[in-house]
Image 1 (cartoon, rainbow, N blue to C red):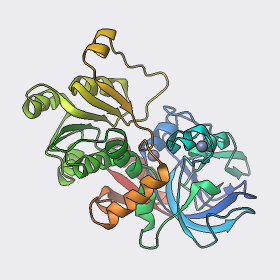
Image 2 (tube, rainbow, N blue to C red; image 1 turned 90 degrees about the vertical axis):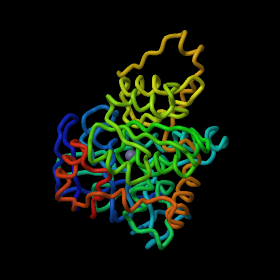
Image 3 (cartoon, helix red, strand yellow; image 1 turned 120 degrees about the horizontal axis):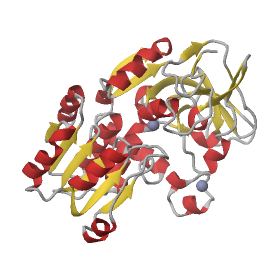
Length: 358
Ligand SMILES: [Zn+2]
Ligand SMILES: [Zn+2]
Protein backbone atom coordinates (compact mmCIF):
# COMPACT_ATOMS: atom_id res chain seq x y z
CA UNK A 1 0.00 0.00 0.00
CA UNK A 2 0.97 3.64 -0.29
CA UNK A 3 2.42 5.76 2.48
CA UNK A 4 4.58 8.88 2.78
CA UNK A 5 7.89 8.05 4.47
CA UNK A 6 10.64 10.22 5.91
CA UNK A 7 13.84 8.22 5.55
CA UNK A 8 16.07 10.30 7.85
CA UNK A 9 15.48 13.00 10.42
CA UNK A 10 16.35 16.38 8.94
CA UNK A 11 15.13 15.65 5.41
CA UNK A 12 12.47 18.11 4.29
CA UNK A 13 10.70 15.96 1.70
CA UNK A 14 8.64 12.83 2.11
CA UNK A 15 8.92 9.88 -0.21
CA UNK A 16 5.51 8.59 -1.32
CA UNK A 17 6.05 4.85 -1.72
CA UNK A 18 3.77 1.96 -2.60
CA UNK A 19 5.72 -0.85 -0.93
CA UNK A 20 4.70 -0.11 2.66
CA UNK A 21 2.80 -2.54 4.86
CA UNK A 22 0.97 -1.77 8.11
CA UNK A 23 2.13 -4.25 10.75
CA UNK A 24 1.24 -5.25 14.29
CA UNK A 25 -2.35 -6.36 13.79
CA UNK A 26 -3.57 -8.82 16.42
CA UNK A 27 -5.41 -8.94 19.75
CA UNK A 28 -6.41 -5.49 20.99
CA UNK A 29 -5.53 -3.86 17.67
CA UNK A 30 -7.59 -2.11 15.01
CA UNK A 31 -6.82 -1.73 11.32
CA UNK A 32 -8.02 1.60 9.90
CA UNK A 33 -8.43 2.67 6.27
CA UNK A 34 -7.39 6.32 6.52
CA UNK A 35 -9.64 8.69 4.54
CA UNK A 36 -8.48 12.14 5.63
CA UNK A 37 -5.55 13.43 7.60
CA UNK A 38 -4.57 16.93 8.60
CA UNK A 39 -1.05 18.23 8.34
CA UNK A 40 -0.10 19.45 11.81
CA UNK A 41 2.97 21.50 12.62
CA UNK A 42 4.14 18.71 14.93
CA UNK A 43 4.64 16.53 11.84
CA UNK A 44 7.14 19.06 10.52
CA UNK A 45 8.76 19.29 13.97
CA UNK A 46 9.21 15.53 14.04
CA UNK A 47 10.72 15.62 10.54
CA UNK A 48 13.27 18.29 11.44
CA UNK A 49 14.12 16.74 14.81
CA UNK A 50 12.56 19.34 17.13
CA UNK A 51 10.28 16.60 18.46
CA UNK A 52 11.85 13.20 19.25
CA UNK A 53 10.81 10.49 16.81
CA UNK A 54 12.75 7.44 15.54
CA UNK A 55 13.23 7.26 11.74
CA UNK A 56 12.40 6.13 9.15
CA UNK A 57 8.81 7.01 9.92
CA UNK A 58 5.42 7.80 8.44
CA UNK A 59 4.32 11.25 9.74
CA UNK A 60 0.70 12.18 10.39
CA UNK A 61 -1.24 11.87 13.63
CA UNK A 62 -4.40 13.84 12.86
CA UNK A 63 -6.48 11.32 10.94
CA UNK A 64 -9.86 9.72 10.44
CA UNK A 65 -11.17 6.78 8.48
CA UNK A 66 -13.01 3.47 8.58
CA UNK A 67 -12.31 0.37 10.63
CA UNK A 68 -11.52 -2.50 8.28
CA UNK A 69 -10.62 -5.13 10.88
CA UNK A 70 -10.54 -5.58 14.64
CA UNK A 71 -8.39 -7.99 16.64
CA UNK A 72 -9.55 -10.33 19.38
CA UNK A 73 -10.81 -8.64 22.49
CA UNK A 74 -11.65 -5.31 20.82
CA UNK A 75 -15.04 -4.10 22.03
CA UNK A 76 -15.10 -0.32 21.46
CA UNK A 77 -15.33 -0.44 17.65
CA UNK A 78 -16.48 -2.83 14.91
CA UNK A 79 -15.65 -3.34 11.28
CA UNK A 80 -17.17 -0.50 9.23
CA UNK A 81 -17.20 2.03 12.07
CA UNK A 82 -16.10 5.55 11.26
CA UNK A 83 -13.36 6.64 13.65
CA UNK A 84 -10.85 9.34 14.33
CA UNK A 85 -7.31 8.49 15.37
CA UNK A 86 -6.36 9.51 18.90
CA UNK A 87 -2.56 9.75 19.16
CA UNK A 88 -2.68 9.99 22.95
CA UNK A 89 -5.05 7.24 24.05
CA UNK A 90 -6.03 6.90 27.69
CA UNK A 91 -5.60 3.59 29.50
CA UNK A 92 -8.30 4.49 32.01
CA UNK A 93 -6.54 2.93 34.97
CA UNK A 94 -3.27 4.83 35.64
CA UNK A 95 -3.14 7.59 38.29
CA UNK A 96 -3.40 10.37 35.66
CA UNK A 97 -6.48 8.77 34.07
CA UNK A 98 -8.11 8.22 37.46
CA UNK A 99 -7.66 11.92 38.21
CA UNK A 100 -9.42 12.78 34.93
CA UNK A 101 -6.21 14.09 33.36
CA UNK A 102 -6.20 11.60 30.51
CA UNK A 103 -3.99 13.91 28.43
CA UNK A 104 -1.18 12.94 30.81
CA UNK A 105 -1.60 9.18 30.36
CA UNK A 106 1.64 7.70 29.09
CA UNK A 107 0.31 4.21 28.36
CA UNK A 108 0.02 4.92 24.62
CA UNK A 109 3.62 6.07 24.42
CA UNK A 110 4.80 2.67 25.60
CA UNK A 111 4.23 1.56 21.98
CA UNK A 112 6.11 4.47 20.47
CA UNK A 113 9.29 2.41 20.04
CA UNK A 114 7.45 -0.34 18.13
CA UNK A 115 7.39 -0.07 14.32
CA UNK A 116 3.90 0.41 12.81
CA UNK A 117 4.99 -0.35 9.26
CA UNK A 118 7.54 -2.26 7.25
CA UNK A 119 9.05 -2.10 3.79
CA UNK A 120 11.27 -4.52 1.91
CA UNK A 121 14.15 -2.44 3.30
CA UNK A 122 13.17 -2.79 6.94
CA UNK A 123 11.03 -1.43 9.76
CA UNK A 124 9.25 1.93 9.55
CA UNK A 125 7.84 3.75 12.58
CA UNK A 126 4.63 5.75 12.77
CA UNK A 127 4.75 9.26 14.22
CA UNK A 128 3.53 9.31 17.84
CA UNK A 129 2.67 5.64 17.50
CA UNK A 130 0.16 6.33 14.70
CA UNK A 131 1.34 7.58 11.27
CA UNK A 132 -1.64 8.61 9.16
CA UNK A 133 0.00 9.66 5.86
CA UNK A 134 -0.88 6.20 4.65
CA UNK A 135 -3.76 4.20 3.26
CA UNK A 136 -3.94 1.90 6.27
CA UNK A 137 -2.64 2.02 9.82
CA UNK A 138 -2.81 -0.46 12.70
CA UNK A 139 -3.31 1.09 16.12
CA UNK A 140 -4.32 0.12 19.65
CA UNK A 141 -8.08 -0.09 20.02
CA UNK A 142 -8.00 2.93 22.36
CA UNK A 143 -6.60 5.02 19.49
CA UNK A 144 -9.73 4.35 17.39
CA UNK A 145 -12.50 6.63 18.61
CA UNK A 146 -15.94 6.31 16.96
CA UNK A 147 -17.36 9.48 15.39
CA UNK A 148 -21.02 10.28 14.68
CA UNK A 149 -22.26 9.69 11.13
CA UNK A 150 -22.77 13.40 10.41
CA UNK A 151 -19.12 14.32 11.06
CA UNK A 152 -17.12 14.29 7.79
CA UNK A 153 -13.71 12.64 7.85
CA UNK A 154 -11.86 15.91 7.30
CA UNK A 155 -13.56 17.56 10.28
CA UNK A 156 -13.00 14.48 12.44
CA UNK A 157 -9.32 14.49 11.54
CA UNK A 158 -8.92 18.08 12.75
CA UNK A 159 -10.63 17.19 16.02
CA UNK A 160 -8.02 14.45 16.41
CA UNK A 161 -5.32 17.02 17.14
CA UNK A 162 -5.37 20.73 16.28
CA UNK A 163 -8.92 21.59 17.24
CA UNK A 164 -8.82 19.65 20.50
CA UNK A 165 -5.47 21.20 21.38
CA UNK A 166 -6.52 24.78 20.62
CA UNK A 167 -10.06 24.76 21.93
CA UNK A 168 -8.97 22.90 25.05
CA UNK A 169 -6.26 25.47 25.83
CA UNK A 170 -8.90 28.21 25.98
CA UNK A 171 -11.76 26.20 27.48
CA UNK A 172 -9.97 23.78 29.83
CA UNK A 173 -6.51 25.05 30.70
CA UNK A 174 -6.85 28.84 30.71
CA UNK A 175 -10.63 28.81 31.25
CA UNK A 176 -10.84 32.31 29.74
CA UNK A 177 -13.10 34.66 31.69
CA UNK A 178 -15.87 36.60 29.93
CA UNK A 179 -14.92 40.18 29.17
CA UNK A 180 -11.19 39.54 29.29
CA UNK A 181 -8.37 40.62 26.98
CA UNK A 182 -6.55 37.90 25.06
CA UNK A 183 -3.54 37.66 22.76
CA UNK A 184 -2.84 34.60 20.62
CA UNK A 185 0.76 34.32 19.38
CA UNK A 186 0.87 32.02 16.37
CA UNK A 187 -2.22 31.77 14.19
CA UNK A 188 -1.98 28.50 12.30
CA UNK A 189 -4.68 25.88 12.79
CA UNK A 190 -4.13 25.49 16.54
CA UNK A 191 -3.95 29.24 17.13
CA UNK A 192 -7.20 29.74 15.20
CA UNK A 193 -8.82 27.07 17.40
CA UNK A 194 -7.54 28.89 20.51
CA UNK A 195 -9.01 32.09 19.13
CA UNK A 196 -12.38 30.45 18.55
CA UNK A 197 -12.31 29.04 22.08
CA UNK A 198 -11.54 32.46 23.58
CA UNK A 199 -14.39 33.97 21.61
CA UNK A 200 -16.77 31.23 22.82
CA UNK A 201 -15.81 32.06 26.40
CA UNK A 202 -16.74 35.70 25.84
CA UNK A 203 -13.34 37.37 25.59
CA UNK A 204 -13.90 41.06 24.93
CA UNK A 205 -10.75 41.80 22.96
CA UNK A 206 -8.63 39.28 21.09
CA UNK A 207 -5.34 40.25 19.44
CA UNK A 208 -3.98 37.76 16.92
CA UNK A 209 -0.20 37.83 16.43
CA UNK A 210 1.49 36.25 13.43
CA UNK A 211 4.25 37.24 11.00
CA UNK A 212 2.28 35.98 7.97
CA UNK A 213 -0.25 38.40 6.52
CA UNK A 214 -2.62 35.71 5.20
CA UNK A 215 -2.83 34.22 8.69
CA UNK A 216 -3.55 37.62 10.21
CA UNK A 217 -6.36 38.06 7.69
CA UNK A 218 -7.69 34.60 8.58
CA UNK A 219 -7.59 35.44 12.28
CA UNK A 220 -9.79 38.46 11.63
CA UNK A 221 -12.29 36.24 9.80
CA UNK A 222 -12.39 33.94 12.81
CA UNK A 223 -13.22 36.74 15.20
CA UNK A 224 -9.98 38.41 16.27
CA UNK A 225 -10.51 42.05 17.23
CA UNK A 226 -7.23 42.97 15.59
CA UNK A 227 -4.31 41.14 14.04
CA UNK A 228 -0.72 42.34 14.21
CA UNK A 229 2.81 41.28 13.29
CA UNK A 230 5.00 40.14 16.22
CA UNK A 231 6.94 43.42 16.38
CA UNK A 232 3.66 45.27 16.94
CA UNK A 233 2.59 43.21 19.96
CA UNK A 234 3.81 45.77 22.53
CA UNK A 235 1.92 48.56 20.79
CA UNK A 236 -1.19 46.38 20.62
CA UNK A 237 -0.95 45.68 24.36
CA UNK A 238 -0.63 49.42 24.95
CA UNK A 239 -3.77 50.14 22.92
CA UNK A 240 -5.87 47.24 24.17
CA UNK A 241 -4.89 47.20 27.84
CA UNK A 242 -3.41 50.66 28.50
CA UNK A 243 -0.03 48.97 28.83
CA UNK A 244 -1.04 46.70 31.69
CA UNK A 245 -0.77 43.58 29.54
CA UNK A 246 -3.31 40.98 28.50
CA UNK A 247 -5.37 38.90 30.91
CA UNK A 248 -4.43 35.84 28.84
CA UNK A 249 -1.65 35.26 26.34
CA UNK A 250 -1.52 32.00 24.40
CA UNK A 251 1.85 30.92 23.03
CA UNK A 252 1.10 28.68 20.05
CA UNK A 253 4.54 28.53 18.41
CA UNK A 254 6.70 26.49 20.77
CA UNK A 255 9.90 28.53 21.08
CA UNK A 256 11.61 30.20 24.04
CA UNK A 257 11.60 33.53 22.21
CA UNK A 258 7.84 33.60 21.66
CA UNK A 259 7.24 32.27 25.17
CA UNK A 260 9.34 35.09 26.62
CA UNK A 261 7.44 37.64 24.48
CA UNK A 262 4.18 36.09 25.63
CA UNK A 263 5.26 36.33 29.27
CA UNK A 264 6.06 40.00 28.86
CA UNK A 265 2.73 40.68 27.16
CA UNK A 266 0.81 39.05 30.04
CA UNK A 267 -0.41 41.43 32.75
CA UNK A 268 0.70 40.97 36.35
CA UNK A 269 -1.49 38.24 37.76
CA UNK A 270 -2.57 37.23 34.26
CA UNK A 271 -2.22 33.87 32.55
CA UNK A 272 0.38 32.70 30.06
CA UNK A 273 -0.87 29.51 28.44
CA UNK A 274 1.86 27.57 26.60
CA UNK A 275 0.37 25.50 23.77
CA UNK A 276 3.24 25.24 21.27
CA UNK A 277 5.28 22.04 21.09
CA UNK A 278 8.94 22.97 21.58
CA UNK A 279 12.35 21.32 21.73
CA UNK A 280 14.17 19.74 24.69
CA UNK A 281 17.22 21.97 24.19
CA UNK A 282 15.35 25.28 23.93
CA UNK A 283 15.40 26.92 27.38
CA UNK A 284 13.28 29.87 28.43
CA UNK A 285 14.52 32.20 31.20
CA UNK A 286 12.63 33.94 33.96
CA UNK A 287 14.29 35.74 36.80
CA UNK A 288 13.26 34.82 40.30
CA UNK A 289 12.13 38.32 41.15
CA UNK A 290 9.65 38.67 38.28
CA UNK A 291 8.46 35.13 38.80
CA UNK A 292 7.20 35.79 42.33
CA UNK A 293 6.54 39.54 42.20
CA UNK A 294 4.45 39.62 39.02
CA UNK A 295 2.47 36.52 39.93
CA UNK A 296 1.86 35.59 36.32
CA UNK A 297 0.41 32.13 36.05
CA UNK A 298 2.24 29.93 33.54
CA UNK A 299 -0.09 27.16 32.42
CA UNK A 300 1.15 24.63 29.87
CA UNK A 301 -1.60 22.89 27.90
CA UNK A 302 -0.97 19.45 26.42
CA UNK A 303 -3.53 18.22 23.89
CA UNK A 304 -6.17 20.57 25.27
CA UNK A 305 -5.40 19.89 28.90
CA UNK A 306 -8.44 17.84 29.80
CA UNK A 307 -10.25 14.57 29.33
CA UNK A 308 -9.51 13.83 25.69
CA UNK A 309 -12.69 11.93 24.77
CA UNK A 310 -14.90 14.56 26.39
CA UNK A 311 -12.99 17.25 24.49
CA UNK A 312 -13.75 15.42 21.22
CA UNK A 313 -17.45 15.22 22.06
CA UNK A 314 -17.53 18.89 22.98
CA UNK A 315 -15.82 19.87 19.71
CA UNK A 316 -18.39 17.86 17.73
CA UNK A 317 -21.27 19.47 19.66
CA UNK A 318 -19.92 22.98 19.11
CA UNK A 319 -19.30 22.28 15.42
CA UNK A 320 -22.80 20.84 14.96
CA UNK A 321 -24.33 23.87 16.65
CA UNK A 322 -22.36 26.21 14.39
CA UNK A 323 -20.53 27.70 17.37
CA UNK A 324 -17.10 26.91 15.92
CA UNK A 325 -16.07 26.99 12.26
CA UNK A 326 -13.95 23.93 11.59
CA UNK A 327 -14.54 23.62 7.83
CA UNK A 328 -13.21 27.16 7.38
CA UNK A 329 -9.91 26.11 8.97
CA UNK A 330 -9.18 23.76 6.07
CA UNK A 331 -7.56 26.15 3.61
CA UNK A 332 -5.89 23.57 1.36
CA UNK A 333 -6.65 20.07 0.12
CA UNK A 334 -4.16 17.70 -1.47
CA UNK A 335 -3.84 14.04 -2.40
CA UNK A 336 -1.16 11.93 -0.72
CA UNK A 337 1.01 12.20 -3.84
CA UNK A 338 1.07 15.99 -3.37
CA UNK A 339 2.13 15.87 0.27
CA UNK A 340 5.37 17.77 -0.35
CA UNK A 341 3.42 20.73 -1.71
CA UNK A 342 1.41 20.71 1.49
CA UNK A 343 4.59 20.69 3.57
CA UNK A 344 5.83 23.70 1.63
CA UNK A 345 2.56 25.56 2.27
CA UNK A 346 2.95 24.85 5.98
CA UNK A 347 6.56 26.06 6.06
CA UNK A 348 5.69 29.31 4.32
CA UNK A 349 2.76 29.79 6.65
CA UNK A 350 0.15 30.11 3.92
CA UNK A 351 -2.01 27.24 5.21
CA UNK A 352 -4.07 27.07 8.39
CA UNK A 353 -4.78 23.40 7.95
CA UNK A 354 -4.16 21.26 4.91
CA UNK A 355 -6.35 18.20 4.55
CA UNK A 356 -4.70 15.23 2.86
CA UNK A 357 -7.37 13.06 1.23
CA UNK A 358 -6.41 9.44 0.96
ZN1 LIG B 1 -3.84 6.16 31.81
ZN1 LIG C 1 -0.89 17.70 16.06
